[in-house]
Length: 499
RNA sequence: GGCCCCAUGGUCAAGUGGUUAAGACGUCGCGUUCUCAGCGCGGAAUCGAGGGUUCGACUCCCUCUGGGGCUACCA
Image (tube, rainbow, N blue to C red; front, top):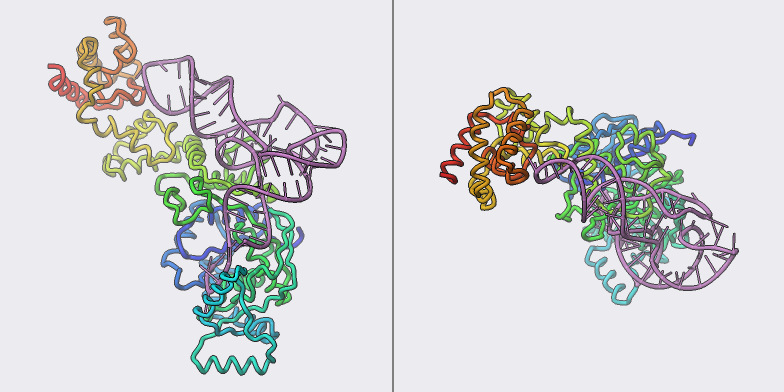
């Protein structure tokens, strides 16, 4: 490739950053970074009704969080700005080309009302025809058409501008991911709107003007844009512009519904922000998304962003839709948490504070203790940082109360009582400086003395000290627990269940 | 309905005419162990169907089936 690679991610600020959008952004970014090209962000905010206030900032913020950066964007304009379509519209950029098309007779003004349009469509459907726009000025001369315009204007109607589709043509391109595709012009549904009644350009028109003016070389986007491509090619052709290379990536699908992941699917967390809040790591999200619809050469699964850049190869993009696999995401995140344990530690501690298990002040003072607690509880088995709360809550921060029937049974059985008594004595006798090995020694001592082992030995001890029958390695936990508290806990258990 | 795309285990997928059809997630079993997690070992599980082409098809072609996308004054 000789010309400069310039790709873009062009979100509309109608919501927060969705997994599907994030993937489009990531692959475009990888494409740019791998080939030393430019990555541009353009905001497509031509639907004023659907724009939401923090849509743009939220999208950019989450993109940044994922580790992306950009060469040109609304917040630090490059030489092809502005990068917001609303601003470009204000500058008359689209208007200029709409007028050019109007002048050449390649587009025209249409005054049909939405009621008329709906009626036409209904009639067509009733007649089992594909919905299709009906050109209203057939056979009229320019002057006659202008006269009609004036008529409609006099009635106070606002026009849209429609592109006159050359229906006998076939639009074909070699798609970067799907290969050769061709679609007949008559399939686009007739003359389509390029400028809305409010003066805003439509997506399919603006995207062409902007991609051309911004010198975009490759357009990598979702499969759902395939049928837009012929419309866009018409505009390139009508304006005499070179057509960029297109690549249409397979979509991400909701495993439950089998449909394109939609913002309305509530069974799947699908905003990057939601994962961020649960404590997924950005490099894990990137890793997971980067493997969705793309596969590397070897057998590894865990890659850094740098490795992705280095490995990127657009020919390995998958043509088949991929289901979103939450379990795999969890596994990948787990791998990253373990790999970057030290880096994740502050975040893990933060979760405990957020969950009110400990105050910020105490947390600051007891950092080393917290690290040990987290270490003993085990990061190895959790999917995301927020889960650290559940696995450390008991017995490090609060005891289960009351005991379950199963626990009471372990405790009050004949063997249980013996173990409890022996353990109470042994524990009291151990010094404050006792190590995990010392605790283990004491427990083994009881085992030998009473000839009780396994659960019948361990469960009464666990219950007496932690109110649990399961949890991390007990000797290691005991080191971290406050001796006075544990003694008190044992005394309480004894008074309540054993006396 | 029309047009377009897709099709390897439950999921992500490698594979580009000759392979024992990789690997990962998940799942199941065994082991380690007081339990959970982890770790180790092992197992089950895939080429949607039918026709061709070929000495030989998961790989190429056709048909069918199934799935998905689009079909707006949304992007």
